[in-house]
Length: 397
Length: 87
Image 1 (cartoon, rainbow over the protein chains, first blue to last red):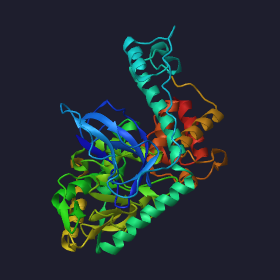
Image 2: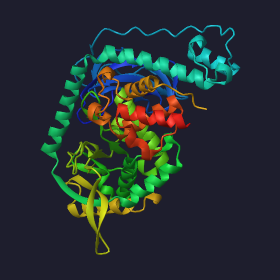
Image 3: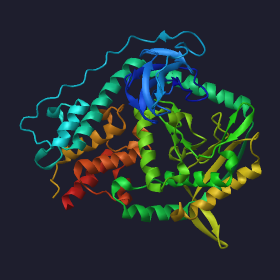
């Protein structure tokens, strides 16, 4: 038996509001399943189960604000006997306070007899399982036939609409959300500048080969599979971290803890203001195609309010790029407890010396901000040199 | 074969695609000659999602080299009208 607690989703998080349970007591859960939604200063976050088992009991009602570390539910391991929790009280802090009035759950839509609709038997069964009204499903098969994919798309849309209503109900006005996010960013950045002795090193990278390769590569690809050059930067950073692993670490207590996994956090500006920096898990192990697909998904979910808890708690370093805003160099502030952040500026045309000849080249400035308690400028320089070298062989990324 | 659309229909499609990436934008206030980036603060990921949405709505293939021609509403309508005329 294990307590499922209100997670810490960043150095600045002290409490969160449980918005909704997405699993019911008695339901089986797998590690990684989304079982609850929590509102934080970064918006509504989907909370994943950390283990496989049975959701035995929920301990906190929806729309209740509790401190980080409070037990929210009990999860029983598969095959283990049921047991009562030691305590349903918060681990620390004040007792839970209702945040706003509970939201009435939306009842599942009734299953309507499809009548003359063209529906495959398996799609019909899936619709019944998911509570999808087939009358409302747009069929994309021949003659408007409804497939399993159509039913899944309709179910996803219905979930999104219910979720949107919960977000609107839970999070207050856009101005309130922005104010809370700015306060959270202020707390984290003030802590960073107070506690972390930053040092900065930068280099100018010739992007000619990388951009030429990308242009050729995208010519071969269908529109949906085209790559952005930012993906090359992310992969190069991830691979360079294998060579300088002390930058891929967290400062915990009074010591550095290196991470074997490389989870690059990507700074994403939100359209309503503020930013988040969720992780692209195992960035170094992903192909460029996977990285692009996952990056696109991450940006979409960050802006729509659908990030997952592990994406906020797992980054081991952050990358920020302000080139599209015309910025040439970025001297970023480290997000604690991470120990490094990489900033990329704009790709600009500059005179460049190649074989003693001055030629025009597309170049970009990369800057590393790093924690001097953990690494020195020498290692920081080696890291940037590795990023540069990797970008000169884009086909190997 | 791609059905021919009027310029108004193309404009509507483009604005709908813009609305998907910038839901907070007042689409009625879009200045047709000013770049989307300057008006809507969109980045390369937003722009990629925009051209994919247009591609899916109009069933036209848009080469990456032509992306600059789609930087404003007027640019999009001119470019897409010509593209669909050729299709």
